[in-house]
Every structure is written in structure tokens, then in C-alpha cells.
Amino acid sequence: MKIVCIGAGYVGSVTAAALAALGYKTTVVDMDRMKVEQIALGNSPIYEPGLGELIKMTAGRTLFSSMSYEAVREADAVFICVGTPSAPGGSADLTYYRQAVSSIARHLDPARLTVIVNKSTVPVGTAGLAVSLLEDEGWEAGRQVSVVSNPEFLREGLAVEDVFHPERIVVGVSDRRSGEIMRDLYLPFIERRYPEALQAFLKDHYPRNKTRSAYMETDPRSAELIKYASNAFLAVKISYINEIAQVCEALGANVREVARGMGLDSRIGSRFLQASSGWSGSCFPKDTSELLATSAKYGCELTVVRAAVEANQAMHRYVVAKIRRRLRSLYGKTVGILGLTFKPDTDDARITQAASIIRQLAELGADIKAHDPQGIPMFRRVNPDLPVRYCTSLEETADRSDALVLLTHWQEYIEPDWEQIRSRMRGSYLLDTRNVWDAGQLREMGFQYEGIGLGD
Ligand code: UGA
Image (cartoon, rainbow, N blue to C red):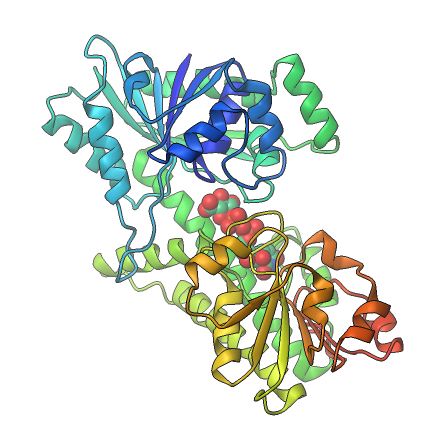
């Protein structure tokens, strides 16, 4: 099988590298010359653990990159993996998606069926929209071209593990032939029939992963909605536990214990019940706002999802209020922020809780220092107006700070040299929004430690 992936971002580069590692001849197409060159050189265009190795294994053998759409002509399937950011008003902006469809339309082979696969998270009805665009260009749907919805469920930072051990593969098709092609394409993933070199790579990196994959075929609209409904549900779950965390603090209970007890009920499940400063990232904020915008357009008011979004914004304010309570006035106080990405193991800092919390702290007069192992360049680029002194290490961030606030639980923040931090800080307040530090040890050392929802 021959594949083209349009877009070499967080979804496209992982998808392309995975398909290439399976042995499919795969070409990634991107307008960004730097990304195309990096892939050709065997390097990852983004920071994602494991991806560099995968690209090194495949570049020039089964994985190719290009700025041209030429490879579409010989492709059996063309995966669209372009960004669909939020437009003003909350709906997804389909500019890049539409451009991809019209460029594909100019390069299809008229003599056979090419399947166009929507991997980008696109509003319900987009597969249908693509069919109309292609028909307008003279292509016959079902015979020369088919559009399939195949939402991706990869988590950033764990994307390479997820792509080879998917819990579910959802494919929305409107004709039998494209359904067969998609099933053939995914069969090795479902049966874990991977080439030897790839098996060795997976055994080495993820020896304990025993996930089984469910393959679900449905109609395109339902597949598109599965993606939004899933992300919104997960966002609701986190907003819920964050509200329970606030109740824990008020009533003297411990949210980690409460979540543990709740999770023992398999109807609830233990995952996505970790209290935090709130959810963010490039998916939940944009997908919840698109779902709300589209639903409203059709007269449906999703009160639960809207409440989850509002509760999330309230969580950022709650974190700021906690800091304020301890430091009293923030004027002239220095707050050190640890973690600018929305979660660890990614350089993605497009939409983060850090930006919202830093903005509020700065407005209250605080001086902000910040560190992140990977996220500083992107954070600085998307938040040029934030008055932040960027640091090269955790220790430098601690220097003369009145408070240290952990927002992202990067591994290197988990067990730092506390003696050194204590001696460098001006104050002693630690706010651990991921509940990963050892409260007892830190209090013994003279820190004023607080977590989220720990109620002590
Ligand atoms: C999310 C979904 O989990 C993926 O299944 C989906 O494919 C992806 O969006 C997408 O639409 O592309 P991702 O945004 O990479 O993945 O990150 P998550 O691990 O879901 O975390 C999202 C946010 O929730 C982060 O800020 C994280 O720190 C926070 N979170 C997560 C919590 O605060 N508590 C938790 O228990 C879990």
C-alpha cells in the first residue's frame, strides 16, 4: 500500500512514521521546508518521545517527505493531518483542510479509487463537505475518490506508544470498497503483526503495554462526533475532579484518596481523575469550543460541556487565589513557574494553563520567572506580551523567588535538589498543582507546601 500524509505536525508526523515503520511507502507533504528537510535527514520535526528513532529507522527507506502533492497520484490512501485551530466564535477553522482537499483534487489518479482519510479533528459533516468539494472538481465519489473519517486518539507525549497500541480504531465510511481498504490498512495494527525491527523497538520501549485494539466501522458523521464527544467527556471528567478537589480542601478530605476510591468502580474508572490546575492543550479547549459552537448552531445547548469549560477557567483563578492567599499582596513578589507546556513530554505550548495563570499573576503585580525543559521557544512565540523572565533551569527559577509553582510534572521536576532550592529561594511557598512532591519531606525541610485538594 502507498500512503500520503498531508501535514507534518503532531498528528501527521507520528501517523506517517508509524505507517512507514509498518512497511507502507509513505510520503509526508508539508509546506514548511524545515519540517520536510528534517524528516528527509531522519530527524523528528517535533519533540515527541520515540518519534526521532522511528523516523531514523524509516527515512529514505519507506518514509519520504516533500513539499509537493505529486505522491498523491500513486497513493491508495491520503491522510489529511492538517491543523484545525479555533476560529473567532469557537468553530474550527477549516482553511488548511480545504486547501489540502483542493490540492489533493489536482493530483488524483482518475483511473482508480483513492481513499481520503480525515485524521484532522474536523467538525461533524466535514467528510460530506469534502465529497462535495471533490465532486465540484469533477471527481466521482465512490468510484474515483472516497472520503473516510478516521479520528485520531493519540495523546501528545505518548503518541508513539498510542499509535502502535491503539485502544480503538474508529472508521466512518460511506461505501464498501473504502471500508475494505481501511480495514486492510489497519489489520497489522489490530493483530499486532509488526515487522521484526519494529517489534524489537516496541519491546524495548513499551514492554508492558498489552492493550488490545477494538476496530469500529460506522458512518462518517458518527465517527466525527465520537472524537468530539470523547474529548469533551474527558474534559468534563477532569473539571469534575478539580471541583471535588476544591471541596476536599474546604472539608479536609484528600482528593487523591477520593479519586482512588471512585476509580475502583469500573463504571467510573480511575483514569483522568488527577486533580490539576486545569486541562488545556491543543485539543480539549478547541474541541470543546467547536462542539459547543456546532451544537448551538443546531439548537442544542450542551450545558454539561459548557460548565466543564467554565469550571476549568475557574480552576485557573482558584490556583491564583491560593498563591495570593499565601503571599498576600503579589506586588514585588517573585513567582517561579515550573512547566509551560500543557503536559509533560511535549514541546506543545500553544494553549496552556500556564499562560492563563501567568497573565493573572502578572496583572496582580507579580514578577514571573519560568522554566520548561522543552516548551520555552513555543510559549514565548505564542505569548509575546507576557512579562516572563525565562530561566535555563529549575534552580535558576528558584533563585530569589517567593514562591515556586509546579504546573507541569516533567520528570526532571519530580525529585530536584531541595536543599539547593531552599537556599536559593527568598520565600518558602511551594504550590504543587500535580500533587507529585512529598509533602511530609518538604514541610520538614521548612517549605510551606500546598498541593491541590489535599485538604491538610
Ligand atoms: C487528548 C486526548 O486524551 C487524546 O485521546 C486525543 O487524541 C487528543 O487530545 C487529541 O484530540 O488529539 P492530549 O491533549 O495530548 O490528548 O492530552 P491529555 O493527556 O488528554 O491531557 C489533556 C489535559 O488534561 C492536560 O493539560 C493534562 O495535564 C490534563 N489532565 C489530564 C489532568 O489535569 N488530569 C488528568 O487526570 C488527565
